[in-house]
Image (cartoon, rainbow, N blue to C red):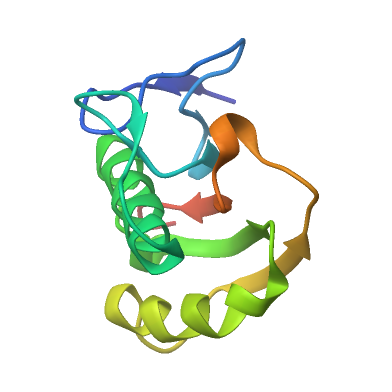
Length: 129
C-alpha cells in the first residue's frame, strides 16, 4: 500500500491539522474545501452560488494535484448551512460534472468554518487498474 500526501498552492492551504488530500494507492481522499480564495485565504465575496463555484474550483485544483480531475470523483459530500441552497448546488454542478455523476450526500449543518455557506469533501479514484 502506497500513501502520498497531496499539496498544492492552487487550492487553499490547510487551516488546521489536516492535509488537502491523501492518496492511498489509486484512491484519493480530499479534505473539505470551503470557498476560500487560495491567494488571499479569505472567503470569496458574493452570494452562495459564487461560494459553490469557488468550492468546486478548489476541489478541482486538489484533484489535479493528485493526478485526476473532478470527473474522477466517485463520492461527493456537500455541507450547507441552508438546504434551501441545494438547487443551486445541482445547477452549478452540471457546469463541473457530466454523467455519470458521482454518488453524493447533502447535509444541512448549523455552521461552517469562517462563516462559509458551503463545504464539500470527496473521494476520487485515479489511474487504470
